[in-house]
Amino acid sequence: LSAHEEMKFIRHHIKLAIKSSSKDSSPSRPKSTIETMGGGVWDCLQSAVSLRQPTLVFPVNDMQTYEPLPGMVATRDNSLPNHGFISCITAAGGCAPSQWNGQRNIYTPGTKGDVKPALRDVILMKPGSTVEDVFLGLKGMGALEGEFVRAEKASRIGEKPRPTTKS
Image (cartoon, rainbow, N blue to C red):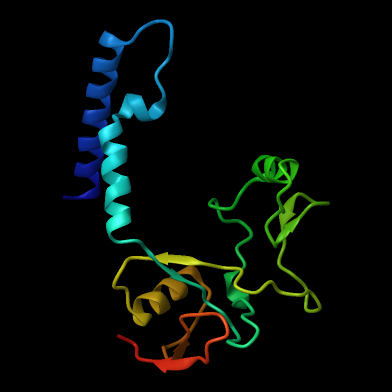
C-alpha cells in the first residue's frame, strides 16, 4: 500500500464517517473529532502502538554526563513548539524548551559556556531498529557526518556503557 493509496483510503473513510454522523447527529451537541473520524480508528491505532511500543533513543556526546550531540540543535524545524505554544506551556507552570530564547522569541543554539541539559534529545525508532538505523537517521538529520566507526549503549542511567555492534 503506497502512501498515496493510504491517503485516499483514509480520506474516503473520513468522508463516510462525516456523512453518517451528519445524518444521525443531534443538533444539541457537536461531535468531537474522534467521534467524527470514528472511534474505531483511534482504538485501532492505540492498540497497535501498545502492542509494539517505539524504541526511545537518546543520542549523547558523552556517556558520563549525557551531554547532547552538538549537531542535534534544530532552530528552524517545523516540529518545534512555536511562540504561542511555548506561552501556553509557561502560563501553565511548565518550562520552555532548552534552546528557546525568551527575549528574542526564537530558538538559538547555546554558547560554549552554557550548561547543556542531560538527555535533551530523544528519537523514536521502530521496534527492532538497529544501531545502523539510528546512525543513518542521525546522519539524515545532519547531527552526524562521515562513516560509522563505533557506538556505545547503556540501558539505564548510570549503567557502564558497553560497545555495540552496527546491526
